[in-house]
Amino acid sequence: MQNALTDWVDDLLQRKGKYAFLTPITGTLSLLLILVPLGVVGLAVAQWIGGGVACALLFIAVGYYALRLGQTRALVEERARVLNRYAARVMNESGPGAFWIEDWEEEVQVSKGGDTTIDRWLTIRVGDSPLYSCWNAAYQTLGNVTDRARRRVRSYAHAFDDHTKRQGLRYDVTDRWDGNKNRIFVHFPDPVPAHDARGVQVSWSWPAYSAALLRGDGAEDFEWMPRRRIKRLKATITFAKECKLQEEPRMDIINGPAPKITTRRHHVYTIEAEYLDMEPDIKVGFRLTMPRSDEFES
Image (cartoon, helix red, strand yellow):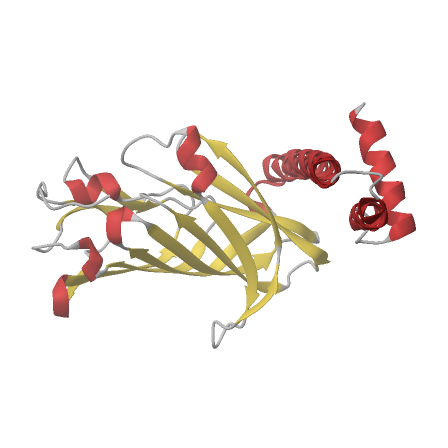
């Protein structure tokens, strides 16, 4: 039944064009304009007929586009599942040698309600085989990410210029959730040749990512544990004035050199950390806590 409806409307649109749904309405109105003056049809009946035709066509149009949207979503979801399975298999089988990160620069912007954007500029070096996809992950360390919250998280990837950070081509991205971790797979339009370098910017828009931290509900870890060697990792975390922090975040070092905290006007706090020659599977980072806030706005 659903396929019959979409096939019929597809055929109608193909023959009549994008205004196909207006043809029955204009035809009906033209006929009524002839019949009403002749007294064949009363005005009330004409209004009833015209309204009925319009409502019926509106119902068909809404149903058609709803079905088409559902079919499109199903195709997109199936495509994402196929790409994720492929990329996960490549990730598991290739190991650390598929590519490594020569330079990792990260900026985290925390705003009102703990809404957070994460931008990473990664300069990757391809291993001995051409690279079709690369991957990276972000995760929320404090609190649980519900299914509803997962649906609000958005991720993107672009090429970028190493010198200016100017965005270039947008890459196709699929993602997979594992608890609080969102892993994204970046799919290149053409394989990156072996031993070549490529700049990839990955970004997340993550509502309420640091909400629990701003409320003072616990400690949030800002940590990195690369699976591949990294020459340099630089991270900057900024708490905007909309966070309404009244004092500097309290910090405990997890591993590595102590970051620098800078206080700017309007209670804007910036934390800068830099790690050099990082070895695989060694965690570095720091832990932040905030005093409990009664003025927190979610």
